[in-house]
Length: 235
Image (cartoon, rainbow, N blue to C red; front, top):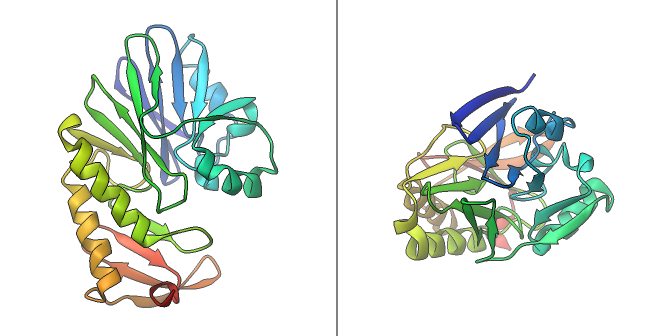
């Protein structure tokens, strides 16, 4: 069973067996950010917490973030993530495209979309402007970051986090990650940039592991771990 934990009077985190998603409430609307891994009833869970009109936004299309999507006819997502979503959900649902700089107003609570491609092509973060909180999806965490499989790109990941740090670091004081420790300080971002750079440069040496029926290389960069395809440094 998912665990519902209030963050404040109008914000909740829902812990779902190693992944978390969020419900944000404004004065006029509510937004579910991701829909979990084992929660096809994510929408019903959210509606026990708010009576306001409810929308869904996905930080990306990985299956541990989209279990409850099919209960929603429409959802916000980066159009760069649509191909990934098609492969998982067989084209069910209607995408409402969001892009870098787009704003979603919940009524007295403004959210800003920030593109963070790399973990997936259409990964995004959500800046809760007044609260000074960044909801970072999978890109910013201290657990295991998946960088194996189609369309993962370490170079773009480093570029994305670097741009985030240079352009937006004065706008938030706290990061809400989808995995691992909750919450995180913004200082986790430059640590991840440095760690990913050490992998690319060869400074960090990984170890071969078997994970999810695949042969991978696990890189422990101190602040997090990266799971990568064995060939990615040669591509």
